[in-house]
Length: 277
Image 1: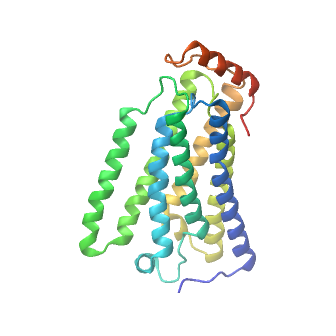
Image 2: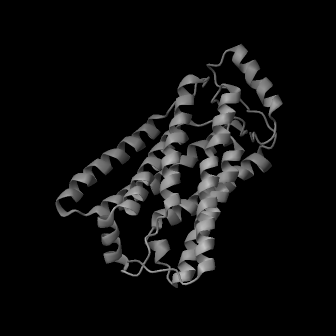
């Protein structure tokens, strides 16, 4: 058995933060999906961001679901970090991961059916994703003989952290190159920021109650996930509200025909602010 909560208010705060993070992160997918639907275009949304996001959330789902549901993995976790420590994955973490994978697949589907101009998935992004899944496959065969399940899911956790670090970079660079955030929903970023802050707060509350910071280094993936997300969210907010506020793109993808260009410009005039649905 894991350690029980010492403070009921702390436990309530933990659950509250957890579900705020869950709803914020879950809802954060919809502004971009709705924006794509309204514009019938995905111009301005970086495809590398979406593809790496799918790998990130898929590997995070594997980690969360396994650690939350598998008693064998939980035993290995407590053997490593101590019998009194609580498992640092909550039900909201698993629920979020399932929803995140589904919504990312919806966004990827929109990329295939809506106007995308000359945008495409880069070879670098494809290579990164391919290497990540090949590495995961190799680690599965390594873990099988010794039943090193905790080590194995830590590999998936490492992949999701790595994807979190790199997935934002193409979108940030595209915004910089276009000198505009048009086509990329700021609603996604605001909700993602709230989710990151409350997710980090959830871990802090659990650590304070237990008088131990093992929740941070025992689940380093969740810790880095919050910090990296918060950093890039702040960067996107600066781009949207300060650097490129109200600016139209400095270029339109070359493969857009004149009708599509005119349609895009009309759409931008109708939704000049933050694109919140």
